Length: 120
Image (tube, rainbow, N blue to C red):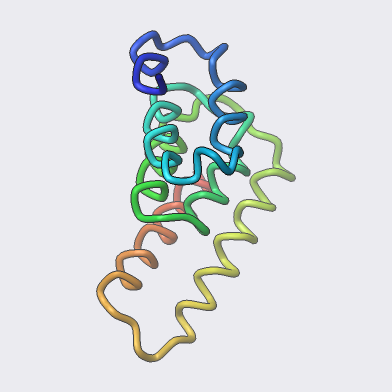
C-alpha cells in the first residue's frame, strides 16, 4: 500500500503514512513506509524523520535521509535546533568510540550529511 501511495504522490497521505509508521504492527515495514514518504515534502515531520535517521535501521535511515533531502520550504528554527541536537548527540557518542567498524563510520558520514542538510 505504501508504494501505491508513493506513486499517487498526494501530500495528503503523509499524515496516514506517519500514523502507520508509528504502529508497532509496522515495525518491520518502516523502511518501506519511509521510502514512500521520501517522495513527498514532509517538512512538518522533520523531527520524526531525523529520529528515524538517528535511531532506526539502515534501510529506514537511508529512506528518511532521502525524505529530508526532498523537504522544501521554511522550517521552524526551534524544530531544526532540536533535530541538530539529536544528531550531534548521536554523532558525539559514536566519535568517542575508538573501535568503530565500517558500518559505524558510514553511519557517522550519514549524520554529518544530515547536519549539513539541517544547516542549509
